[in-house]
Length: 156
Image 1 (spheres, rainbow, N blue to C red):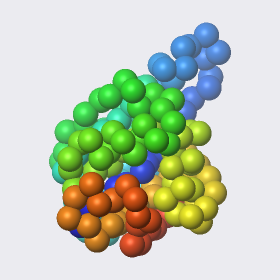
Image 2 (cartoon, rainbow, N blue to C red):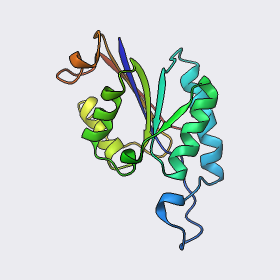
Image 3 (tube, rainbow, N blue to C red):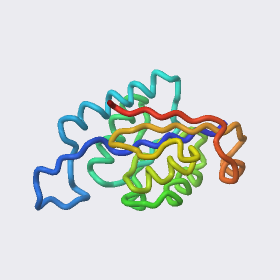
């Protein structure tokens, strides 16, 4: 079985207009939502082998909350910053992990979630968690087929 979890970074702080986009931190709501959504995912019984994250501060901080909930290290990948849907999916598949979390940004996250859910997920708001499951032995059997099941959860 292959399970892919997409997590859009939690709500970020826009308070400093001079701050580079890559360096924006989470705001108070984001700092609350990330651990809460990580715990909710952990309660489903999902256990990731790997967490891949964009290098942007808001994504890294979100990923670290998930890493803490699962006691799994976060692997940073600069190519996930602003990545399109195809890259997000390819990075997950290339990891070889059968259960992987990818933490990144829109519009790529929403595009990938919409594609995998046959447009059942129209938008990934901040800190949304979408899970996709394929009853397949490995990633080579995943790309050409739709998932066997998917779920969607948001902090609100």
